[in-house]
Amino acid sequence: MLEARTGNKITCPSADAVRLYQTGVDLLLGSESGAGETLDRALALDGNFALAAAARYCVAKDIGEPNAVRFREQALAALAVASDWERQHCELLIGLVDQPAAVRKAVEAYVAKQPADLLIIAQLVGYLFFFDGPQKLTSVLALLESVEAALTNDWAFLARLGFAASEAGQHQRGRAALERALAIRPQSLYTIHGLAHLLHDEGAAIASAELLQGWLQHYGSGASSGQMYGHVQWHLALAEFQVGNREAAIERYLHYCAPATTTCGPILTLADCGGFLLRDYLQTGLVKPLPNDVAQHIECVWGMMGHPFVALHVAGLYASAGDLDGLQRCQLEAASKPEGAHRRVSLRLISALTDLVLGRYAQVGQTLSELSASDRIGIGGSNVERILVDLIERHCEAQN
Image (tube, rainbow, N blue to C red):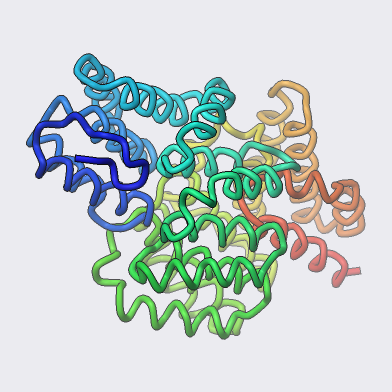
Protein backbone atom coordinates (compact mmCIF):
# COMPACT_ATOMS: atom_id res chain seq x y z
CA MET A 1 0.00 0.00 0.00
CA LEU A 2 1.00 3.63 -0.47
CA GLU A 3 1.40 6.28 2.21
CA ALA A 4 -1.60 8.56 1.81
CA ARG A 5 0.15 11.89 1.47
CA THR A 6 3.60 11.15 0.02
CA GLY A 7 2.64 8.30 -2.29
CA ASN A 8 5.63 6.29 -1.03
CA LYS A 9 5.28 2.55 -0.67
CA ILE A 10 4.76 1.19 2.84
CA THR A 11 6.52 -2.11 3.43
CA CYS A 12 4.23 -3.38 6.19
CA PRO A 13 2.69 -6.72 5.08
CA SER A 14 -0.62 -6.11 6.91
CA ALA A 15 -3.08 -4.01 4.92
CA ASP A 16 -5.21 -3.58 8.05
CA ALA A 17 -2.22 -2.25 9.99
CA VAL A 18 -1.48 0.23 7.22
CA ARG A 19 -5.07 1.47 7.20
CA LEU A 20 -4.96 1.91 10.97
CA TYR A 21 -1.67 3.79 10.65
CA GLN A 22 -3.14 6.17 8.07
CA THR A 23 -6.15 6.76 10.32
CA GLY A 24 -3.89 7.26 13.35
CA VAL A 25 -1.80 9.86 11.53
CA ASP A 26 -4.94 11.83 10.61
CA LEU A 27 -6.07 11.70 14.24
CA LEU A 28 -2.62 12.85 15.35
CA LEU A 29 -2.55 15.74 12.87
CA GLY A 30 -6.04 16.78 13.96
CA SER A 31 -5.13 16.46 17.67
CA GLU A 32 -8.21 14.25 17.89
CA SER A 33 -9.30 11.43 20.15
CA GLY A 34 -7.93 7.96 19.60
CA ALA A 35 -4.60 8.58 17.87
CA GLY A 36 -2.60 6.54 20.37
CA GLU A 37 -5.13 3.73 20.58
CA THR A 38 -5.41 3.48 16.79
CA LEU A 39 -1.65 3.30 16.36
CA ASP A 40 -1.52 0.70 19.14
CA ARG A 41 -3.92 -1.45 17.13
CA ALA A 42 -1.69 -1.12 14.08
CA LEU A 43 1.33 -2.19 16.11
CA ALA A 44 -0.59 -5.13 17.55
CA LEU A 45 -1.02 -6.40 13.98
CA ASP A 46 2.63 -5.78 13.09
CA GLY A 47 5.14 -5.06 15.82
CA ASN A 48 7.80 -4.33 13.19
CA PHE A 49 5.82 -1.46 11.67
CA ALA A 50 8.39 1.31 12.10
CA LEU A 51 6.19 4.15 10.79
CA ALA A 52 3.44 3.35 13.29
CA ALA A 53 5.88 3.04 16.20
CA ALA A 54 7.52 6.39 15.38
CA ALA A 55 4.13 8.11 15.12
CA ARG A 56 3.10 6.50 18.40
CA TYR A 57 6.24 7.91 20.00
CA CYS A 58 5.15 11.40 18.90
CA VAL A 59 1.77 10.96 20.57
CA ALA A 60 3.30 9.59 23.76
CA LYS A 61 5.80 12.42 24.11
CA ASP A 62 3.25 15.11 23.28
CA ILE A 63 0.94 14.10 26.11
CA GLY A 64 3.73 13.23 28.54
CA GLU A 65 2.90 9.53 28.57
CA PRO A 66 5.04 7.44 30.98
CA ASN A 67 7.52 5.10 29.34
CA ALA A 68 7.16 6.78 25.95
CA VAL A 69 10.69 5.63 25.17
CA ARG A 70 9.43 2.11 24.51
CA PHE A 71 7.85 3.28 21.26
CA ARG A 72 11.09 4.92 20.15
CA GLU A 73 12.95 1.69 20.85
CA GLN A 74 10.32 -0.29 18.95
CA ALA A 75 10.58 2.05 15.97
CA LEU A 76 14.36 1.97 15.86
CA ALA A 77 14.41 -1.82 16.12
CA ALA A 78 11.87 -2.08 13.30
CA LEU A 79 14.07 -0.04 10.95
CA ALA A 80 15.98 -3.24 10.20
CA VAL A 81 13.10 -4.29 7.92
CA ALA A 82 12.12 -0.81 6.72
CA SER A 83 12.76 0.82 3.36
CA ASP A 84 15.23 3.68 2.92
CA TRP A 85 12.40 6.21 2.87
CA GLU A 86 10.78 4.76 5.98
CA ARG A 87 14.12 4.72 7.78
CA GLN A 88 14.78 8.37 6.99
CA HIS A 89 11.25 9.41 7.96
CA CYS A 90 11.37 7.59 11.29
CA GLU A 91 14.85 8.76 12.24
CA LEU A 92 13.99 12.39 11.48
CA LEU A 93 10.61 12.22 13.21
CA ILE A 94 12.22 10.80 16.34
CA GLY A 95 14.96 13.42 16.06
CA LEU A 96 12.37 16.20 15.91
CA VAL A 97 10.82 14.89 19.11
CA ASP A 98 14.12 14.39 20.96
CA GLN A 99 16.65 16.90 19.56
CA PRO A 100 14.92 19.16 17.05
CA ALA A 101 17.69 21.74 16.81
CA ALA A 102 20.23 19.04 15.95
CA VAL A 103 18.19 17.65 13.04
CA ARG A 104 16.62 20.84 11.71
CA LYS A 105 18.91 21.19 8.69
CA ALA A 106 18.53 17.51 7.83
CA VAL A 107 14.75 17.83 8.11
CA GLU A 108 14.67 20.88 5.86
CA ALA A 109 16.73 19.02 3.24
CA TYR A 110 14.40 16.03 3.53
CA VAL A 111 11.27 18.18 3.14
CA ALA A 112 12.70 19.68 -0.04
CA LYS A 113 12.70 16.14 -1.48
CA GLN A 114 9.53 14.89 0.27
CA PRO A 115 7.26 17.98 0.34
CA ALA A 116 4.13 15.95 1.10
CA ASP A 117 5.41 14.33 4.31
CA LEU A 118 3.10 16.34 6.50
CA LEU A 119 3.84 14.48 9.72
CA ILE A 120 7.47 15.60 9.52
CA ILE A 121 6.46 19.11 8.42
CA ALA A 122 3.91 19.46 11.23
CA GLN A 123 6.46 18.44 13.84
CA LEU A 124 8.94 20.98 12.47
CA VAL A 125 6.25 23.70 12.48
CA GLY A 126 5.55 23.07 16.15
CA TYR A 127 9.25 23.36 16.97
CA LEU A 128 9.68 26.58 15.01
CA PHE A 129 6.69 28.29 16.62
CA PHE A 130 8.18 27.64 20.04
CA PHE A 131 11.92 27.96 19.46
CA ASP A 132 12.64 29.95 16.28
CA GLY A 133 12.67 33.33 18.00
CA PRO A 134 11.71 36.59 16.30
CA GLN A 135 11.82 35.11 12.79
CA LYS A 136 9.33 32.32 13.56
CA LEU A 137 6.38 34.03 11.86
CA THR A 138 8.19 34.23 8.55
CA SER A 139 10.06 30.92 8.84
CA VAL A 140 6.91 28.88 9.51
CA LEU A 141 4.94 30.53 6.74
CA ALA A 142 7.85 30.11 4.30
CA LEU A 143 8.13 26.43 5.16
CA LEU A 144 4.43 25.82 4.56
CA GLU A 145 4.37 27.85 1.36
CA SER A 146 7.31 25.80 0.06
CA VAL A 147 5.22 22.61 0.18
CA GLU A 148 1.85 24.11 -0.76
CA ALA A 149 1.88 22.70 -4.30
CA ALA A 150 2.21 19.16 -2.93
CA LEU A 151 -0.50 19.52 -0.26
CA THR A 152 -2.93 22.05 -1.71
CA ASN A 153 -6.16 20.28 -0.78
CA ASP A 154 -4.97 18.49 2.36
CA TRP A 155 -7.11 19.55 5.33
CA ALA A 156 -4.29 19.10 7.86
CA PHE A 157 -1.97 21.22 5.73
CA LEU A 158 -4.62 23.90 5.22
CA ALA A 159 -5.18 24.06 8.97
CA ARG A 160 -1.49 24.73 9.57
CA LEU A 161 -1.22 27.20 6.73
CA GLY A 162 -4.28 29.05 8.02
CA PHE A 163 -2.91 29.24 11.54
CA ALA A 164 0.53 30.39 10.33
CA ALA A 165 -0.98 33.02 8.04
CA SER A 166 -3.20 34.41 10.79
CA GLU A 167 -0.25 34.49 13.21
CA ALA A 168 1.67 36.51 10.61
CA GLY A 169 -1.20 39.01 10.47
CA GLN A 170 -2.76 37.70 7.23
CA HIS A 171 -6.18 37.12 8.77
CA GLN A 172 -8.21 36.97 5.57
CA ARG A 173 -5.91 34.36 4.06
CA GLY A 174 -5.77 32.47 7.35
CA ARG A 175 -9.54 32.39 7.76
CA ALA A 176 -10.03 31.13 4.20
CA ALA A 177 -7.57 28.27 4.71
CA LEU A 178 -8.98 27.33 8.11
CA GLU A 179 -12.56 27.35 6.85
CA ARG A 180 -11.55 25.14 3.89
CA ALA A 181 -9.87 22.75 6.32
CA LEU A 182 -12.98 22.61 8.54
CA ALA A 183 -15.21 21.98 5.53
CA ILE A 184 -13.12 18.93 4.65
CA ARG A 185 -12.69 17.59 8.21
CA PRO A 186 -14.99 19.47 10.60
CA GLN A 187 -14.12 17.32 13.62
CA SER A 188 -10.46 18.44 13.70
CA LEU A 189 -9.51 19.92 17.06
CA TYR A 190 -6.39 21.44 15.55
CA THR A 191 -8.41 23.35 12.96
CA ILE A 192 -11.09 24.70 15.27
CA HIS A 193 -8.27 25.70 17.61
CA GLY A 194 -6.68 27.71 14.80
CA LEU A 195 -9.92 29.54 14.08
CA ALA A 196 -10.35 30.29 17.79
CA HIS A 197 -6.89 31.86 17.81
CA LEU A 198 -7.76 34.04 14.84
CA LEU A 199 -10.95 35.27 16.50
CA HIS A 200 -9.09 35.96 19.74
CA ASP A 201 -6.54 38.05 17.87
CA GLU A 202 -9.38 40.01 16.28
CA GLY A 203 -10.99 40.64 19.67
CA ALA A 204 -14.13 38.79 18.58
CA ALA A 205 -14.96 37.14 21.90
CA ILE A 206 -18.69 36.76 21.24
CA ALA A 207 -18.10 35.21 17.81
CA SER A 208 -15.48 32.90 19.31
CA ALA A 209 -17.82 31.75 22.07
CA GLU A 210 -20.62 31.05 19.60
CA LEU A 211 -18.29 29.17 17.24
CA LEU A 212 -16.79 27.00 19.96
CA GLN A 213 -20.11 26.29 21.69
CA GLY A 214 -21.58 25.14 18.39
CA TRP A 215 -18.55 23.03 17.53
CA LEU A 216 -18.45 21.37 20.96
CA GLN A 217 -22.16 20.60 20.75
CA HIS A 218 -21.62 18.74 17.47
CA TYR A 219 -18.16 17.21 17.96
CA GLY A 220 -17.27 17.52 21.63
CA SER A 221 -18.34 14.03 22.70
CA GLY A 222 -16.08 12.45 20.09
CA ALA A 223 -13.20 14.80 20.82
CA SER A 224 -13.07 14.65 24.60
CA SER A 225 -9.83 12.67 24.81
CA GLY A 226 -8.13 14.54 21.99
CA GLN A 227 -4.74 16.09 22.59
CA MET A 228 -6.07 19.64 22.23
CA TYR A 229 -9.50 19.18 23.77
CA GLY A 230 -8.58 20.91 27.03
CA HIS A 231 -7.01 23.77 25.09
CA VAL A 232 -10.08 24.27 22.89
CA GLN A 233 -12.18 24.37 26.05
CA TRP A 234 -9.69 26.96 27.38
CA HIS A 235 -10.36 29.14 24.35
CA LEU A 236 -14.07 29.00 25.14
CA ALA A 237 -13.37 29.77 28.81
CA LEU A 238 -11.26 32.73 27.70
CA ALA A 239 -14.07 34.00 25.47
CA GLU A 240 -16.56 33.62 28.33
CA PHE A 241 -14.19 35.49 30.61
CA GLN A 242 -13.83 38.30 28.07
CA VAL A 243 -17.58 38.80 27.71
CA GLY A 244 -17.96 39.07 31.48
CA ASN A 245 -19.14 35.56 32.36
CA ARG A 246 -16.34 34.91 34.85
CA GLU A 247 -18.20 32.27 36.86
CA ALA A 248 -18.80 30.10 33.78
CA ALA A 249 -15.22 30.62 32.64
CA ILE A 250 -13.79 29.49 35.97
CA GLU A 251 -16.05 26.46 36.05
CA ARG A 252 -15.00 25.49 32.52
CA TYR A 253 -11.32 26.03 33.31
CA LEU A 254 -11.50 23.81 36.40
CA HIS A 255 -13.48 21.10 34.62
CA TYR A 256 -11.45 20.87 31.41
CA CYS A 257 -8.27 22.98 31.45
CA ALA A 258 -6.56 22.77 34.83
CA PRO A 259 -3.52 20.47 35.14
CA ALA A 260 -5.60 17.90 37.01
CA THR A 261 -8.31 17.70 34.33
CA THR A 262 -6.82 18.61 30.94
CA THR A 263 -6.04 16.28 28.04
CA CYS A 264 -3.12 18.48 26.92
CA GLY A 265 0.60 17.92 27.15
CA PRO A 266 2.86 19.81 29.57
CA ILE A 267 3.45 23.02 27.59
CA LEU A 268 -0.15 23.64 26.55
CA THR A 269 -1.23 22.84 30.11
CA LEU A 270 1.18 25.47 31.42
CA ALA A 271 -0.09 28.02 28.89
CA ASP A 272 -3.69 27.34 29.85
CA CYS A 273 -3.35 27.50 33.62
CA GLY A 274 -0.82 30.34 33.53
CA GLY A 275 -2.73 32.39 30.99
CA PHE A 276 -6.08 31.94 32.71
CA LEU A 277 -5.06 32.54 36.33
CA LEU A 278 -2.91 35.56 35.46
CA ARG A 279 -5.75 37.11 33.43
CA ASP A 280 -8.13 36.58 36.34
CA TYR A 281 -5.68 38.26 38.70
CA LEU A 282 -5.21 41.21 36.35
CA GLN A 283 -8.96 41.74 36.10
CA THR A 284 -10.00 41.16 39.69
CA GLY A 285 -6.88 41.90 41.73
CA LEU A 286 -7.72 38.82 43.81
CA VAL A 287 -4.67 36.90 45.04
CA LYS A 288 -5.21 33.18 45.50
CA PRO A 289 -2.77 30.44 46.59
CA LEU A 290 -1.81 28.16 43.75
CA PRO A 291 -3.83 24.93 43.66
CA ASN A 292 -1.80 21.78 44.27
CA ASP A 293 -2.11 20.59 40.68
CA VAL A 294 -0.74 23.89 39.39
CA ALA A 295 2.15 23.91 41.87
CA GLN A 296 3.03 20.35 40.88
CA HIS A 297 2.85 21.21 37.19
CA ILE A 298 5.32 24.05 37.64
CA GLU A 299 7.88 21.47 38.71
CA CYS A 300 7.31 19.54 35.47
CA VAL A 301 8.46 22.50 33.36
CA TRP A 302 10.90 24.08 35.80
CA GLY A 303 13.98 23.09 33.83
CA MET A 304 12.79 25.26 30.92
CA MET A 305 12.65 28.49 32.94
CA GLY A 306 15.22 30.06 30.62
CA HIS A 307 12.65 30.06 27.80
CA PRO A 308 10.49 33.24 27.82
CA PHE A 309 7.28 31.29 27.16
CA VAL A 310 7.80 29.22 30.30
CA ALA A 311 9.07 32.20 32.32
CA LEU A 312 6.00 34.27 31.42
CA HIS A 313 3.52 31.62 32.47
CA VAL A 314 5.30 30.29 35.57
CA ALA A 315 6.04 33.79 36.86
CA GLY A 316 2.47 34.74 35.95
CA LEU A 317 1.20 31.92 38.13
CA TYR A 318 3.29 33.04 41.08
CA ALA A 319 2.14 36.62 40.50
CA SER A 320 -1.50 35.52 40.59
CA ALA A 321 -0.78 33.99 43.99
CA GLY A 322 1.12 37.05 45.24
CA ASP A 323 4.04 34.67 45.86
CA LEU A 324 7.19 36.79 45.96
CA ASP A 325 9.31 33.83 47.09
CA GLY A 326 8.16 31.92 44.02
CA LEU A 327 9.02 34.88 41.79
CA GLN A 328 12.45 35.15 43.39
CA ARG A 329 12.96 31.46 42.72
CA CYS A 330 12.04 32.07 39.07
CA GLN A 331 14.54 34.94 38.87
CA LEU A 332 17.37 32.82 40.25
CA GLU A 333 16.57 29.89 37.98
CA ALA A 334 16.39 32.02 34.83
CA ALA A 335 19.60 33.84 35.79
CA SER A 336 21.40 30.48 35.97
CA LYS A 337 20.71 29.77 32.28
CA PRO A 338 23.22 30.52 29.50
CA GLU A 339 23.34 34.12 28.35
CA GLY A 340 21.36 35.04 25.26
CA ALA A 341 18.11 36.58 24.07
CA HIS A 342 15.92 33.96 25.74
CA ARG A 343 17.54 34.51 29.13
CA ARG A 344 17.37 38.31 28.79
CA VAL A 345 13.66 38.33 27.88
CA SER A 346 12.84 35.75 30.58
CA LEU A 347 14.48 37.86 33.27
CA ARG A 348 12.63 40.99 32.17
CA LEU A 349 9.28 39.22 32.20
CA ILE A 350 9.91 37.84 35.68
CA SER A 351 11.10 41.24 36.90
CA ALA A 352 8.00 42.94 35.52
CA LEU A 353 5.68 40.43 37.18
CA THR A 354 7.53 40.83 40.48
CA ASP A 355 7.05 44.61 40.31
CA LEU A 356 3.40 44.03 39.44
CA VAL A 357 2.86 42.17 42.71
CA LEU A 358 4.75 44.88 44.61
CA GLY A 359 2.57 47.58 43.07
CA ARG A 360 5.46 49.25 41.26
CA TYR A 361 3.38 49.84 38.16
CA ALA A 362 5.57 52.48 36.53
CA GLN A 363 8.55 50.12 36.78
CA VAL A 364 6.54 47.34 35.17
CA GLY A 365 5.77 49.62 32.24
CA GLN A 366 9.40 50.67 31.94
CA THR A 367 10.66 47.08 31.96
CA LEU A 368 8.15 45.88 29.40
CA SER A 369 8.75 48.90 27.17
CA GLU A 370 12.31 47.63 26.77
CA LEU A 371 10.99 44.50 25.05
CA SER A 372 11.08 45.13 21.32
CA ALA A 373 8.54 43.75 18.86
CA SER A 374 11.10 41.07 17.99
CA ASP A 375 11.55 40.19 21.67
CA ARG A 376 7.80 39.75 22.04
CA ILE A 377 7.55 37.48 19.02
CA GLY A 378 10.49 35.52 20.41
CA ILE A 379 8.55 34.69 23.56
CA GLY A 380 7.27 31.76 21.53
CA GLY A 381 3.88 30.16 21.34
CA SER A 382 1.35 32.38 19.59
CA ASN A 383 0.01 35.91 19.52
CA VAL A 384 -1.97 34.98 22.64
CA GLU A 385 1.27 35.39 24.62
CA ARG A 386 1.99 38.80 23.12
CA ILE A 387 -1.55 39.90 23.95
CA LEU A 388 -1.01 38.71 27.52
CA VAL A 389 2.04 40.98 27.81
CA ASP A 390 -0.09 43.82 26.41
CA LEU A 391 -2.69 43.13 29.11
CA ILE A 392 -0.04 43.43 31.83
CA GLU A 393 1.05 46.77 30.38
CA ARG A 394 -2.48 48.11 30.12
CA HIS A 395 -3.28 47.01 33.68
CA CYS A 396 -0.28 48.92 34.99
CA GLU A 397 -1.07 52.01 32.92
CA ALA A 398 -4.55 52.05 34.43
CA GLN A 399 -3.09 52.07 37.96
CA ASN A 400 -1.03 55.22 37.41
